[in-house]
Image 1 (tube, rainbow, N blue to C red):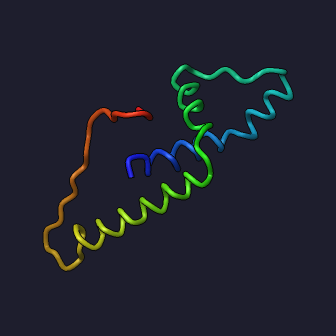
Image 2: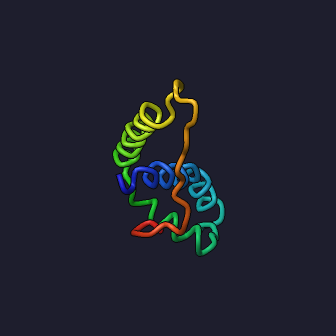
Length: 93
């Protein structure tokens, strides 16, 4: 589950611009300028398959179900949520 959130997020973020990149290249003969941040992100995202995207969504669904059933129980008077904040680490950071 280490990349469950990354796969759908990066995949959708990259492929939502497919038509734009294609149209831009046809019209101007070259790829559009992108910032270094976006170039790196698109570079990582272009290697994520649709199967990985779906796998990530399936894994997130398991996690969300577990949180709902074990942490955010409606019959519990006080619930809490622990959010891991900080700089991400690893391949996609």
